Length: 297
Image: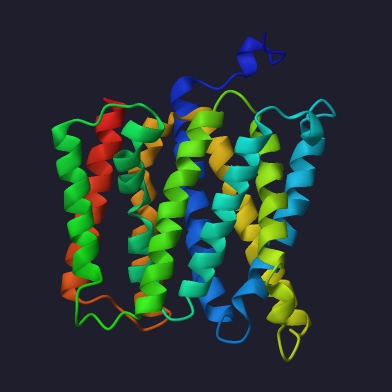
């Protein structure tokens, strides 16, 4: 039973609009983090930036646990093996994505990363026991055809960066599958805290071998920590958005982040995608939106 008076509860339409707005702000925060990280990678190692990111995220995670009361204890959480595995998959995403950005244009890197929903659909019959219809397989194939347009021979994309981004996409697909398995079993703040702690531990392992030289000055350190907080805040905004709007409704809107990546890549880094890469991105977006709307139907 809710402790909020009935008159204080938002109308469904107002709640839905607020959720969509929170979702768009979260996507803007994610895109800003990616672009800011690519900029900082010109001066600082990827493992160092990842550690700074998750130090900031852990502060937010502790705040979430404290805000939701003492009843949420990490040591008493159910499904610990899945929580640990979920954290490891996201740490793999963070490590591969950040490292790939050293060489990859932001727009193409983000487009490859956004094949993860297609990969999740392809894996769902075996990992989730879900039926995938022929039209969904066609959408998956179209999305992968779009990726091939981006990474085609002659595209000048670095092989190592492309491979790392592909690993990041596959890892994020597994992360999504594990999130589905944990839905309703573990409170959101506990999942968030577990993920933050494990990501910090995993990304910290290589960090001593990649210390920055010179060390960031005060302005750069504040910017690096601010980017980490931006990433953590985006995840909190996503949780708030999903509390107001169904995941099926929000899923097609995810590709707004890809559009932002294209804008950042074009106007900040002066690396606009060529026409074939844009066509590939269009195929990935169309396939992803179709699958998301199919799931919502």
